[in-house]
Length: 561
Image (cartoon, rainbow, N blue to C red; front, side):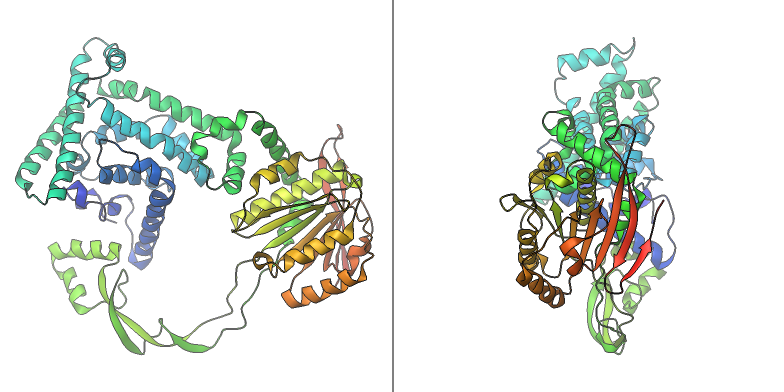
C-alpha cells in the first residue's frame, strides 16, 4: 500500500482513498492487495456497525473527519496496523491539530496497553475505542471554542511559567483546523470552487502546526491536555484486565448492550453476584481437561454430498458474460492495464483497484467445483437434570459444561436451547436463537440450586418437541444427569428413534457419578461416564472421564488422568 503521499488535500474527498495510508508495510502481488481489501472491509464494518453511534453524535467536527480519525485509530488499536506518515506536511494539511495529538497519543504509556487489550479481545478493543474517540473529539473542540472554560484555562496555565504562549498557539491551530474542516464541508455542500483560497489556508495551518511543535515544552503541554484522557483509558484497561473473560461472555450473551459504558456495572449488585458465579464456573471448566475434551467432541459437522463434478460457474473461463467493476487484475480490460504506463494514471489505477472500480471481463463457463463442502455445525439442545440427586458436585459440573457450551454456540452463531427438568412441575426452557435471547434467565440458572424429583418421560417429550421446531430441526442433543433415569413411556422412546432418523440427530449423554445410563442408554449415540474429584475444601475440583461408549459400535474406551 502507498504511504501518506497519496492522501488528497481535500478531507471530504479523502474517505475512499484514505485506507491506502494505513500500513507501513509494502505489499507484493495479489495476496497483499487482497489482504488490504479484506482489512479495509473489516474496518468499514467496525465503523458502521460498532462505532456508528459514537461517530454520529453531533459535534462541531464534520462527520467525514470524525470518520477518518476513527478509521486511523481503529486500524492502529483493533487491527494492529501502524499508520506510517511518510509526508507529515500533507497529513497536517488534511488533519491539522490532530497530527501532534496523534503523535503524543502513540508515545503515551496507556497506548500499548490499550492495543494489548484489543489484541486479546476484539470486543474490549471496540469498547476502548468508544471511550477514546469522544475524548479526542472533545479535545479538538474544547480549546477551539471562542472562550475557553475558566477551569480548563486555569488548569492549563498553571503548567509552568511561560506556557501561556504555547496555550494560545495551540488554541489558534485548533480554531484554524475546525475552520478549515467546516469550510471544506460547506464548499462541498454548496458546490463552490475556492480551491486556491483553501490551499492557502492549508499551507498557513501547516506552518502554524510545525511552528507549535518546535516550541520547547509543547510535549509536556499536550501531555497535560490529555491527562484526563489517559486517566480514563488507564481505568478502562485496569477493569478489562480483571474482567476480560467476563466481558467477552457478556458480549456474547447480550450482543446489543453497550458494555463500553457499563464496565462498572460488573461490580454492582445483584449483577456482580451472577458474574462472580459465572467466573467460578468458567474457571472450573478450564481446569478440567477431560470435560473440555467432551465438550469439544459434542456437536457434529455436516457435509454436502460429494461435489467433485463439472458445472456451469462464474469461475469458468469459456466465454465473456459481461463487463463489470472489480478489484481483480486477472481479467482487466486493456484500457485499464494501459494506465500503468503513465505515472499520473498509475496512482489512479491503484486507487480504483482498492475501491473495486477496475473495468474487468466477467467470464462464464464450465468449472470443476472441487471436493465436498463442509457446512457449519448445527444447533444444540441441552437437557439438564436439576433433581435433588444432582445437588453439590454434579451441579457444578453441569453448570460449567452448559456455560462452556453456550459460549461456544454463541461465538459460532449457532442456536441453542437449555431445558431444565426435575419433577413434572419443575420445567424451564432457556433459548438462544434468532427468535429469542433469554440471557437473563441463563444467568439466573447459574444461581439456581438443584432440588426435587426426576421425570425423564417429560424431559424426553420436551426434547422431542424442540427437535421439531424450525430453529432446532436436526439439532444434536446433550443430556446431563446422574444416570438415575427411568423411562416408562415406550411410545416416547419409539418416537425418539423415528425423530433421530428423520432429522439425522445425535444424542450425547453425560453421566455424573454413576456406572449406568438408565433409560438413556436406549436412545444415546455416545455416553460419557465421569466422576468429580473435589479439592481439599470440597467446593470445587476437576472432572475425570472414567469411560466413554459409542453405542453404534458398542466400543468403549477407558480414560483417566
